[in-house]
Length: 147
Image (tube, rainbow, N blue to C red):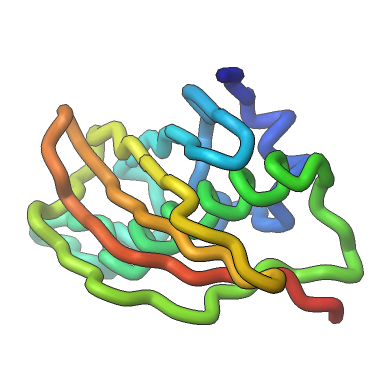
């Protein structure tokens, strides 16, 4: 198990502000799972319009944060870093459920487990939690493609 700070995360993800949604990796086990964190701040650009009277983190961004954690897990499992000639894409999202809203001030904990890897297609079980309570769960499928 190991942790990663934001400087290490930037080596693995091509995302940058405002779409970088992983602040820290809390634990990681190659070929198995990752636990990462996103600090949700009122300063996030999406809160300006979602919703001004009751700010809520968009569900699609919670799923994106889970996918970014999955990408780090995959790249670290493969012992490689982000490459400019390759992009890591979603190829499927199943069974997404949103249980509770995520608000400014929350610490979003991203938990992703590898279910299987077949011919470059990775399947994951993913869940996001706030204060040990499930807020989002999904099955993700991703792959790397040359650009």
